[in-house]
Length: 231
Image 1 (cartoon, helix red, strand yellow):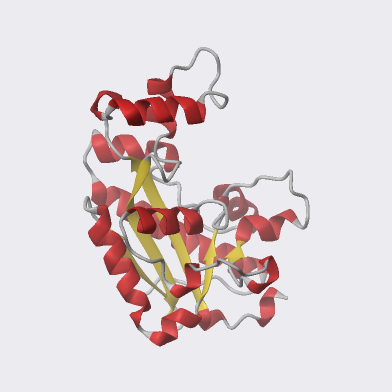
Image 2 (tube, rainbow, N blue to C red):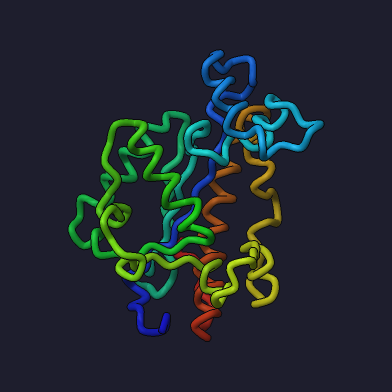
């Protein structure tokens, strides 16, 4: 039962990702060919590799990068304390994120994200390996059986065994009466805001809103009251 998980041990997490470069022409020829090969059967016939890269390049860890990781945990005040690791230097961002787990207490946390098992958790781990660093203990899953991994995925919780089902965090927030995080931007806009508008701060704010929403959707699943964010 999810009610049995000590709430103070849960680390709520969300990431924002973008393509590694803003323009297809800035990719080297080998990367362009590998992207074309990997996505060939995912694209519609009238969508070229470069068009698909601009739209989906940030989704795959091999071709994208992380520009923000926001995390939240219960504070002594009873509110949610949120912190972000963001920047243009992905390696520095990931190093700072990894340093958070130098505290032995943090290695006992239970990670929670929406679609985290298929996106956030593996994406962070892959990008850390690409940047020549080891993922922190909570993300080290090699050799573990599925039931030995304590991660919480709100999308998985909502499936109730129905593996065809996909539900957005925005929809869950709506049906549970949780304030939406999509009051300014949504995930499809992040790349253009990063490369064209060059507004990383706006992305950070959006990512932190997602963390608060994620926390409160999970609270609703446990039939608990909504949390406010600690200033």
